[in-house]
Amino acid sequence: MMRIPKHFINPSRLKEFASEVDEIEMLESGKSIIVDIDFSPEEPQESQWMDLDKTCEEWLESLRSDVISGDLRLSYLLWLTAVERGFLRNECKEPLAGIGPLSAPLKKFAKFVKIDSDLVQSAAELSGSTYAGGASVDVSSSAIASIPDSEKVGLLRRIVNGDPHVAADIRRNARTSQGTVRGRTPSRHRTVAEIRKRMLTVGNERRATALRRRGARVWTQIETEINSRTPQGYDKAIELLVDARTLSEETGAVGAFSRRVRGIKERHRRKWRFRERLKAQQM
Image (cartoon, rainbow, N blue to C red):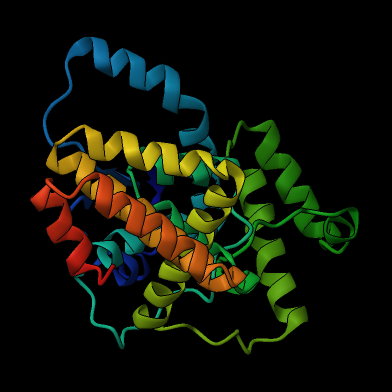
């Protein structure tokens, strides 16, 4: 949960990101809006709440500060959960033109709510427009110097009076100023179909890299999974074989791969359930 002063948040704008996400709710409380994000399948026990506090308190406060200063990338990550679950049509466009580079708190949030890492990487490959709340804003000396003296006096007065949101206001204004300088024509917003396609490519590249690193050990792992004689083991072996085939096609080693597969078929010819899975993959 985050308590955000009303003048720092536009509920209708947030709903544009999270209209298909049931796990987010906005409640009015006096002069604030409480943003309630709940992805837990059941109520945690008291000990789990304590663990969550220790794990999340620091980066959750950092995310709240970003939201107050106009950074909308947290909302984009919530939108990604709807993409991952297939709630959005292929022709729908992303609400920001990318969200890269991701800050450490955003990465932790994505991991915490278990968004597919390949999907997150695909979304973060492009940097969103600053004026739209995309990338983080570093408030430089020149940005501070550009604030009119009359406004600086007002900001100092707010600091003296204990206003905790002065820094957020300065960052928000700097974000708007940078957007004005860079122009108001945002980058092209990708469709859901394009992001999903890129996610598959990212996943294939990641698995291929992992296979290259493991080298010959991958074949030992395939044998281990097959010898487990479990559906899960068979599925994992097939997944590894599919990745190995893709790598062999990229490196021109299809012949060597085919010989390996023939040997596997011979050694495990009696495991008909595994053989069915091989046949389904045209191996």
